[in-house]
Image (cartoon, rainbow, N blue to C red; front, side, top):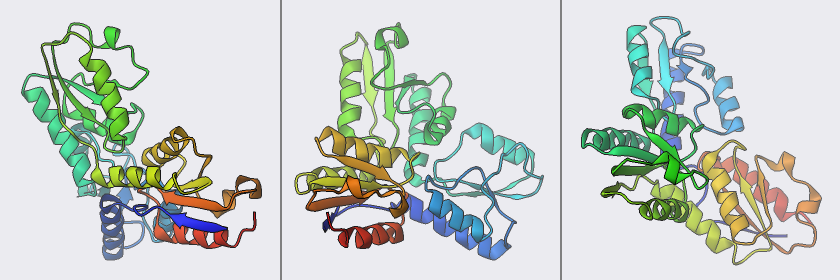
Length: 282
């Protein structure tokens, strides 16, 4: 089978920086001497490798022993968590993605300017939970939100978005908001362009293939978004973590397969999948 790779795929610089920081700190301090506040990134295989090297990723700031070393993962945390860490005298190593940091700062700034902050995103996502901590009463919305009820009597809106969302999706939600009666709406683009480039690449690749495989953590928001874009393009699509989840019927009768991966997926997983799929006879 012919396999075509998306031109932009896999690790983004924020993930690379977080992993490099974690590995360096573990090497310097020793196994078991650094605790991350949850999985560093949304990729099971990478998380497992980091654990094998000595990084504890099961930490909770309220239960970590006082004076310990704690790693803030790439998704970031709220100011409340930093304050809790300070009170417990924890040594904080911050691996928050710089673009997530920017979204946090924009959230705070919009509030200080007098806007009702609105964030487009998944209320359960770690990044979103961290960002909304930078302003009181942030409203989280998505395409399913009843805007008439949610945004009633809020005349000045400051809008930001989860960094991993697709521009088209964010634009559609903003358009729905603009149809309401507000005195002022300020939109700040907080999207990650690396993620956007991956989205553009996969949409382009869908024009060339018979089936798409999207590799990445099943709980990874940006990977799920890549799969959704493929499906929206009318392409038969499979979101898998590794080759172990591949089944022959997924590629049966297909000639050309497309392959991409989310921002938390390492190149070795992509290369292994591509090599194995290339030897598959449909």
